[in-house]
Amino acid sequence: MARTMTSADPIPRLKAMADALRFRILNVLQDGEICVGDLVALLGAPQPTVSRHLGILKRAGLVRVRRSGLWAFHDLEREGDAIHAALLAALEAGAATPLHVADRQKGRRLRTTDGCCPERGDESPCGSRS
Image (cartoon, rainbow, N blue to C red; front, side, top):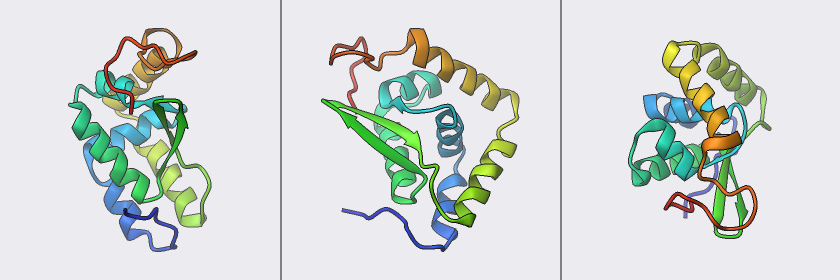
């Protein structure tokens, strides 16, 4: 199993952020945790693709996972060194395009009313629990 990035070397984190889909995922996570099912709905990408990209982001130390029963909720890793803080600032500054703004709006809506992530219990209208 790959380990999460903990060194000050920025290259793995920069490489992880340098993919358009991963950048969109990180952008959505700026507003808080979300499950894969909601990311799939938001991004329009297949579940295996979203899960693979989340794994890359996790190994780079940019995303953390909280488990609740059968569900996994992904969130932006906000703790880190000065390089990590600079990367998060770059993420926020770079996510001002209409696509990125729309993604965040959809993410907020999915988190509050329209999403498939369970708020209570393990029942959910979406098929993916990761």
